[in-house]
Length: 309
Image (cartoon, rainbow, N blue to C red; front, side):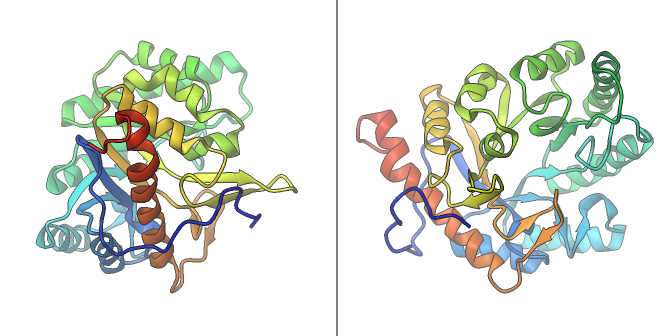
């Protein structure tokens, strides 16, 4: 990993810092630990009560059998933890637009029942990588599939959150807006991942400015490009993803919702990296603490003229 371009932060404290009014801190649990107990323990150490669910015990939420899911839901409820979003595999980097559509509609059908049990209506999706099609045909198929999925989500009382990641509308604001226009459904909104600008080669702040009115959920991560051109993930505010600028812009707009950490330092599902071991939870907590510090010391003062809140 390259040298951090910013000075090292001060000692981490175990005392949680309150987020700005209208903002809730959360984290994608499996970035901290493979098992649910470890995920909940990491949140508890941060003093946070909001969880974003992607997998538990190495299995995607939709792949758990009913008994395993029932136990998971009971354990989450028993701790008073709120599930703020479920991260699906629908239209993601492993599901090109030429692949079988039924696996996405089937996954959404399962998640509709499970989101109802968990008390959340948000499901993270992407917009299908290409697989040799021309641009026009790729766009046509994406619009059609996402329209069908949005109607299915509407019927289930869900909202699909399209992430600026893999897929036709993943990295360009005009395509995100085009997709929202063509689908024309309250069940399709945007999830903005601040850290994705570095690996995909765009400025996060500029993209956010173009689509912010449609953003309902935010992922917080940061990254740098190494001298060899590889991407290395770092603490929020310590890289080149414009985390500080994006969070400040959101607060200045009066944005309300969840800022969810996705460190990516020990787990990166898109490339098969899993180095969590005994240090994944510690890295997760360090990211949470640094987000709190960044917001309290730099973001909130920039918005409120030195006054937090």
